[in-house]
Image (tube, rainbow, N blue to C red; front, side, top):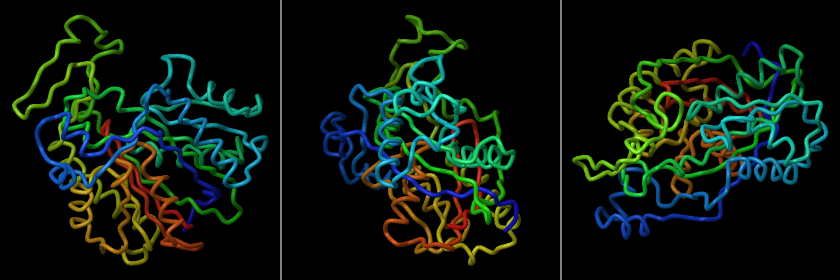
Length: 337
């Protein structure tokens, strides 16, 4: 594998204490069943914020990383924070988190706004900073409180999404462990997964607060998260396989050489379709959304940690990661664990 110089050396994550299970959702909706929700999503419960800001989740994930892995916070020289739900328009939430966790003031810190591909893009940014000699020990945090944007009576999104933050340590490595990247963007799909109102393109108003219920019984306003599920599925099945094949070709390895595939944990239905299209053996395909939900940019690092803790990946394992979603945006790479 070529182009190395950076490695993932530690991952920790934080889940909010509040849990919403399928039984609670059935009681609220008055329709569907617990089993129907599980069959559609592969999710039995999801953690959601109860007043916390994304900076709170990010700071707690960082503190867990320092504690669980014995990381000296004084050695961090750059902070990258991926979020679609920042505390403020400005300042950057990364600056707030730097102060909350007591990182030194001589570091770089910035936010970037991406969703389900955000972790892969964060690895690319971190590797670039390390390759350029700008940083050597980067704290990459992927965190979102997307459930804040969901209308309580929108079954199509409320059954899927949860909140979380993951903290990943990316360090300079003589041998290198993070491979080359396949990245892609198609902004023509921007209206398929979007919060239409609330920013400058469509400021909040009496009109944007009007609730509408569609023919499937899902209620939302333009200020809430909207997802066109069939279109997002179609995008995923037509785009992600090519990204996977390109990543394999870039690293001169075959599908069979990969020890574990860790994709964005969207829904079980979507991932099973994707696995079948690509031809990945079920035993090499990791899923862990059942008790967490789809936590957007945090899903991949959380899955990597769970897979590592379960003994499914070991030093030297080839792990393919792939993220895809809002934008449209996608990315994939190979990690030598």
